[in-house]
Amino acid sequence: MDSLITAAARALASGDPLGALKRVALRDDAPALALRGIAMAQLGDLVRAKDLLRKAARAFGPKEAVARARCVVAEAEIALVSRDLGWPARELDAARTALEARGDRVNAAHARHLEVRRLLLIGRLDEAERALGDIDPAALPPALRAAHELVLFAIAVRRLRTKPAREALARARQAANAADIAALTAEVERASLALTAPMARLIARGEARPLLLEEVEALLASDTLVVDACRHVVRKAGTVIRLSTRPVLFALARALAEGFPVDVARNTLLARAFRAKHADESHRARLRVEIGRLRAELKTLADVSATEQGFVLTPRQPCEIVVLAPPADEAHADVLALLADGEAWSSSALAIALDSSVRTVQRALDALAAGNKVQSFGRGRARRWMTPPIPAFPTMLLLPGPLPSD
Image: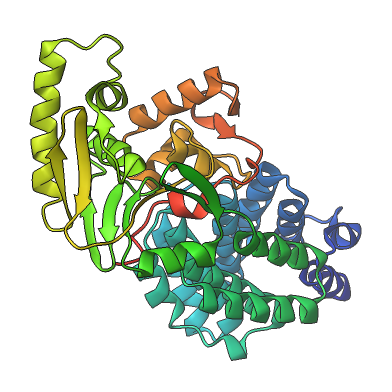
C-alpha cells in the first residue's frame, strides 16, 4: 500500500474525510475508490458513496477477498444510515465471515455491530443482545469500543434499565474521548439526552406530570396498576395484558383509569371509544358489550363495575391506577417515533420496522404529511420521509420491540 493510501486511511480513521479526499480524489485504482467512497459517506453524499464502493469492490482482484468484504461492510453501513432495511443482510454476514476467517477481527466486529444496530431498528432486542455477546470490547480500538457501548446503552434504554444504561454511556464517553473524533463525541452526547428528557407523562387522579426514564422504570416495577398508552397494555408488576389489537377496549381502559377513583360517565366513554357525538341506543348497547369484554380481559387485575352515571375501574388488590402516556398525544405516534431520529426513511423500511403493511404505513404518512408533521422528497422507490426531531417526543417507549417485562 502506497503512502498516499495509508495517509488517506489514517485521515478517515480520525474523522477527517476532506483530508482523505485531498490525497486520493484524482485516483481511480481500487483502494482509492474505496477510500473515496468512505469519505463521501462521512460527508453525507450516500448515493455517490455507494456507487464508489461498488466500483471498488469490482476493481479488487479475486485474491483480495478482505478488501472486497470491507467494501460490502461499508455499503451495509450506508444502507443502515439511509434506512434501507431491505438491503440483503446475508451479504453482510458473508462479508463478516470472510473477514473473521482472514484475521481482520476489527472490521469483522464492525460488521457485527451493523447487524446489531439493524436488529435494534426492527425491535429484535433479544437477538441483538445475543449477537453483541460474541464481541470482546476490550480488543476493539477506541472508536469501535464507543460504538459498542452506545449499542449496549440503546438496548438498556429500550429495556428501561437505567443503571446499566448510565454505565454503558459513561464507558462510551470515555472511549469517544480516547478516540478524539468530534462526530463520535457529539453522538454520545446526543444519546445522553434519553436520560434527561421526559420519556412519558403520568396521568393520575386528574393531574399529569412528566417522567424521566428512571421514573418510568420505578413505576413499572411498583405495585401500581398502569394503563400503558405507549405500548397499549395494562400491567401491574409482572402481569401484562396486551390490548394493542383491541383499540376500543384500550380506549375504554384508559378513560376509566384517567377517571379513577371515581366513575366515568357513559357519554364520555362513548365519545372516547367510538367517537360518537350523538349516541343512540345502538351505541349504548355496544358499550355494554365492550365493557363486558374489557371486564373479562382485566379480571385478574381489576373489575369494571356499573354505576348510576357510568362505569368505574376498581383494582382487585388495593393500589393506585395510573395512565402512562406519551409526553404529547399524537396520531400515528409509532411512525413519528421512528422518524424522530432525523434520518430519511422509505415507507417500506418503516413497514419492516413496525411489522406492518406498506399500505398501512403509507396511509399514516399521508395523514401526517397533511398535518405538516412529516415531509417527503424523491419519487417512486426513491421517495423518503423525514421530520426534524420533535422536542420531548418519546422515541424509546414507542419504538418496536419486546416489553420491558418480557
